[in-house]
Length: 115
Image 1 (cartoon, rainbow, N blue to C red):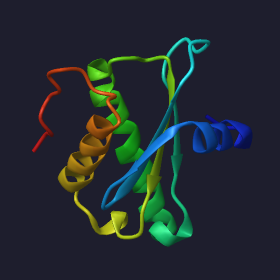
Image 2 (cartoon, rainbow, N blue to C red):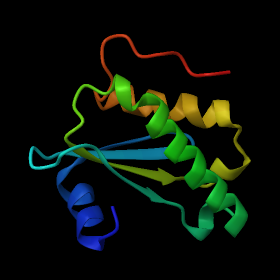
Image 3 (tube, one colour):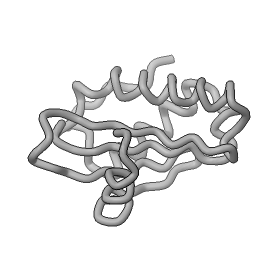
Image 4 (cartoon, rainbow, N blue to C red):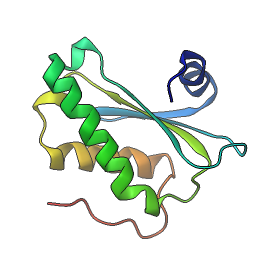
């Protein structure tokens, strides 16, 4: 996702769940060919190198767990919260998966977080 209006649409009409390190927002859209992802890492989430690291981690999480999603025709926005930059990969993955489950994005048998 690259357009401001896409992010705004997910925010206003979609669902969101907040965790300790991330806020996960989603919106189903049957016109999409596949999942459209967007990542928001503000200055509150850390310095520039921390924000880049967080975006790389979020992309890896989507890539690793996309096969477990029930429906791939949706927008998915991951927002880093304050303190996410100091969290380990395992902590970020556990929090991201927890929010994805709360939103009903994952299938019946999701893989456990990698160690």
